[in-house]
Length: 247
Image (cartoon, rainbow, N blue to C red):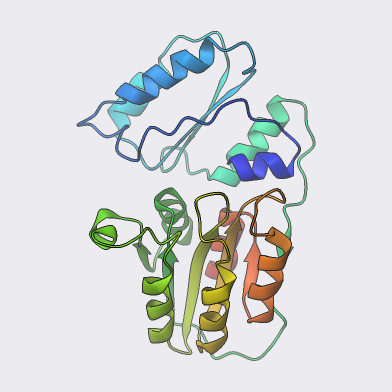
């Protein structure tokens, strides 16, 4: 969300992360409610965007009922059939801004056998959930889940598990994956992932999540992935729809 808004020239006053489980029935949105009140009290925030993995329906209703002075755009996956790109475009319309054409770098055309399986190899849990909802079917793995990060670095830093997964993909697979840029992420994700993409016989689609201000150089990363044979999108939703269209 923040990367897309940056592409559209919209400033962000604060980004408050509350964790992927906050809108579960067990937690009840405690941190979300506090974050909403903090942003509501901030004069620099003209609009609040609430982003979440598929929440507990009851908790989502309770959070939506919070009385705030600042308008809120809800981007709660699975509740309205929308996606994060659609929500970003809604934000732009509320702010009276133009919706840009989200950058993409299609792979060079070539002959491929008919695709039979869609596989999602994700580092971002919310992005993984969004793609699984949009694709409707397929095998999606969130390598940032606790199951995969015990005793090892997060996949935004350590590409090993996804490189291994790419090596197991076959010619009739479409592989959809995210690459997240920014401080604290792999300083050069293409260094390990682009060669793995070039080696796999599968068709690869990359959601490149970042901005032109990120230290990894988004355009250099995009060029490396495209040269390796992948189609690259800055919108995860557009990447997921493209991957689905290849099936």
